[in-house]
Length: 147
Image (cartoon, rainbow, N blue to C red; front, side, top):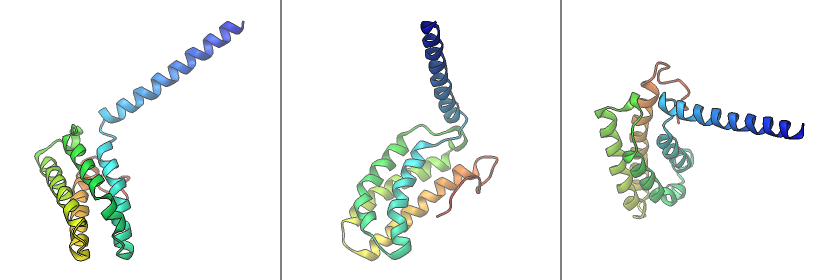
């Protein structure tokens, strides 16, 4: 009896794990996720909001290299089907270029130039985010938190 219960529990656990894994793969296949965008977004939010809210640039300076690394990872990742087009590829390449430039500008110590470059990088990111949220049937406002 104990073996039957143990066996049944084990089978249920395995079935649950497989079902959860399948849903994750299905979400990516159905263009419900763009993990590289989400990763970049988290770092951008940590960098941009302190500047936007109170002109505080230290988080942006500290995150500059990480922004460039994640931008490179993003530009080299496969694109979800709904954003796999020349415009998005061009915008991703520009984001990488801007992120790479931001690393140097962030080290310059010129607050005005750092703020301008950060704002430009943020705006470039939003072009990609708008392509993602605007590319689906739900439209731009579907689940997107505007900065």
